[in-house]
Length: 65
Image (tube, rainbow, N blue to C red; front, side, top):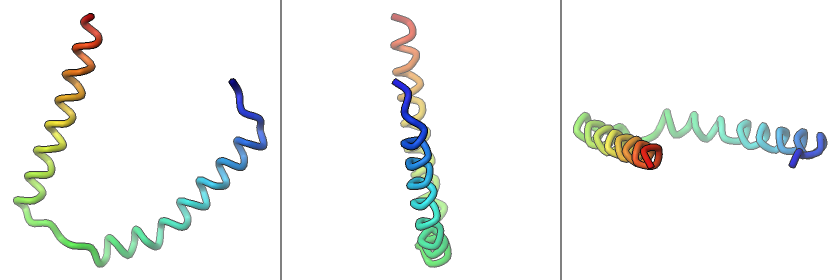
């Protein structure tokens, strides 16, 4: 079902407003946020890699059946 043009435009305006409102907060977090140690970054990257591998495994499992 295709959305009317006015709904598309209003959704784009709302999304743009939300992005504009988030920019100052993101800048503040990047400037004043906590810094992670190398051990914390290694742990985070290992967990993220595990999730990616699990999702790839699930995709391969569904494709084979």
